Image (cartoon, rainbow, N blue to C red; front, side, top):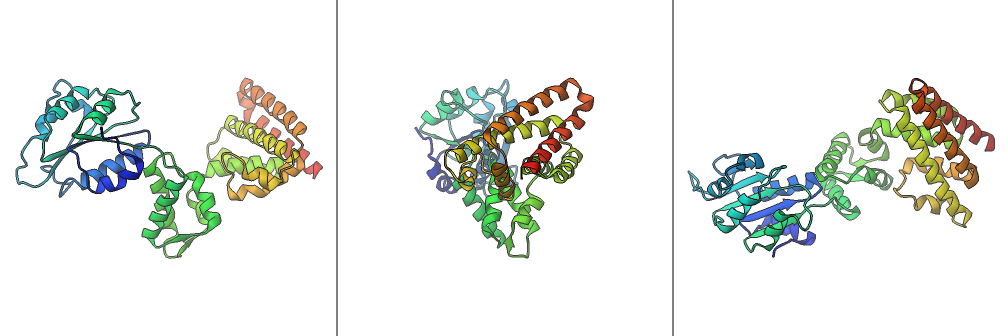
Length: 340
């Protein structure tokens, strides 16, 4: 039974030891990245169609033995050979069972699949077979993302300021290729300057509509009505719906209420903010801290009820949704300003 541990994967990809390797998991970017690495280690030229054959599940429909035939084909000009099979939504189990019964010693078959439960037949047979290995690909944790960031920045000859690193990390994760792409885009933007700053992060990585949405909500609870109107317009211009803005305001009310209860129990505002999940971006902390000193837990509960009523009304009168949402946020800001 060969189900590789996470700590074993990188070294295995450099020197693979089985004729059949299943790579699967919910992180499609990491699955693809590891499949490519395995192929590069298995053939002399991945662009040579005589060295690498690419198949998908559809190609095996009605002919499960095609995979065995491809794996055992002798290369026309010699050299190492591989087959890259993408399972897709097709049942490739019969083809893989036939392959495991008659693997080729001169060809590696790399099978790329999505998320598979422990009991999934394809995963079970590959994990149990002596001539196969199975590699699971899950989303990077914080330490994995930190290694990915450091690796890419080292290759680009760049460093990153601590506040910029803290601001960047929440934008990464979920998909390895997407994370790598964001880091490379940021590195290209900062090329020639040596160090990445927090302004670089928010200029390149952060989505404009998300930033405007956060800014509008934070400004409301911090008592800044003019800023609410400005960022509300930016969010709408970026295509954010009034309903999405209202839901963001409701989530923020719930977060502030939880943090306010921590403050009431004896924590400092800074300690409460550090405990927020998901973590707050660095640039939002000062406004959230202002909100925590402005609003009591009881008043936040009343605001939550008011926002819920406004959301319901905006759904009943969709033509007035934008005006109702903006008025609600500006009203919160004006009330907060009176308390400051």
